[in-house]
Amino acid sequence: MRLKHIKGSETIVNNSNVVIHEPENYKGKWKSVFKNNNKIHLEVGMGKGQFIIKKAQENPDINFIGFEKYPSVLLSAIELIEKENISNLRIVCADAINIDKIFYKEISKMYLNFSDPWPKKRHSKRRLTSPQFLDKYEKIFKRFKIIEQKTDNDDFFFYSLESFKNKGYHVLKKSINYFDSIRTEYEDKFISKGKNINYVKVFKF
Image (cartoon, rainbow, N blue to C red; front, top):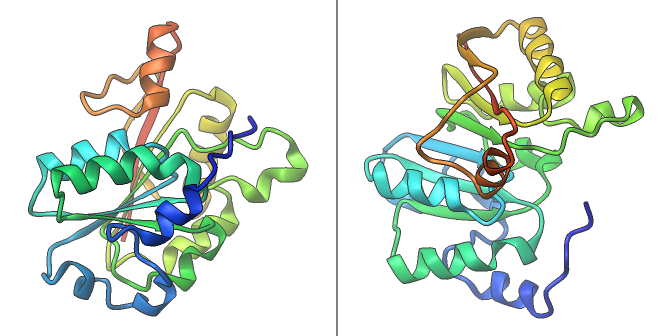
């Protein structure tokens, strides 16, 4: 799906205090951003931020980072975070392919919510649960590796389960008809249309 470009979105993102600029400079020292030693949870592909904003508001003792590639998508999230003064949430506007250049052994949990399934086989390396991306995640987790994934795409879900298994992850919880009290914008849309939501929580030492 082609995303609509909003004129001036890059300027708003670049001038926002909730967006971390030149995030590579904080690799291995993200606790300095939050000025505490609380756990850090990361959502890759935060979109408009409905999920991670609610998570941050309900869990003030956890630090959250929303990772999103497209500046235009972030405008409503930036506005709300600034308005509500949510101090335990920051945004990184960057391509996930560079995730291991931005974090190093400091993430406690990762959320992958409704990632692009890249259905064509020749694009499989772009999937955020591909072996290539799972190898990158190995470098960013603090100790234990915990990933929670939600997707409406059944084929992508089963692909992800196989990828997790092949990389040594263990399934803690799994559902093909999942209901979450904290949902993304896409999740609301799919549920309203009667589409099932696939969910898995995996763990690795």
